[in-house]
Length: 191
Image (cartoon, rainbow, N blue to C red; front, side, top):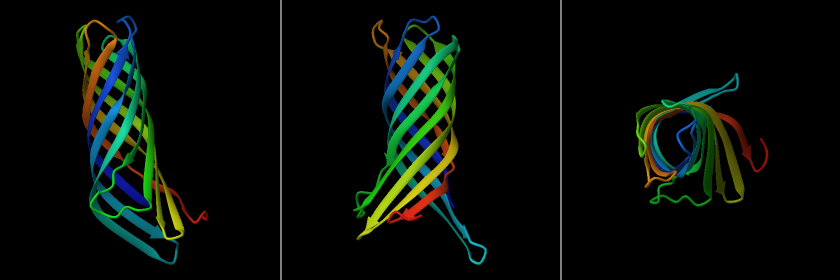
């Protein structure tokens, strides 16, 4: 079992499309970078042998967020959050044969603090589940790790509408916490 308890400083910029104010629907698509501080715990226990290792590390990700929001009330939005991306490798290290990808799906609720025709400032909370796959190849041996777990994201953001149109620039910043457990491990196709 491996657990990540991650604290994220998340910067996301996006283009948002919104219709007129009456029961507004928003689609936000963009690009984001996240910087994590991680607490790692490796634990193994097969009944005869027990092993635990704890460590602290850091990580960075790049991802594409897709957020759908529906206005329940002029001050509250509810919607679906999706993120697709990868952890970034240190360019100063040899990362030959290594790859990873993650996807995250969740439900988000936002409270609008400032609501003007061309500007919105909001606070949000998202509860989500994330899947992470890490592959590493050494010689002819390929190992694949499947991780999964839940998390929460607290964030604040602004939408700045361009001219009078439905298109806006959208910026988010927040804190994200994730816990991952090892779900599956394969080595050369065998579990």
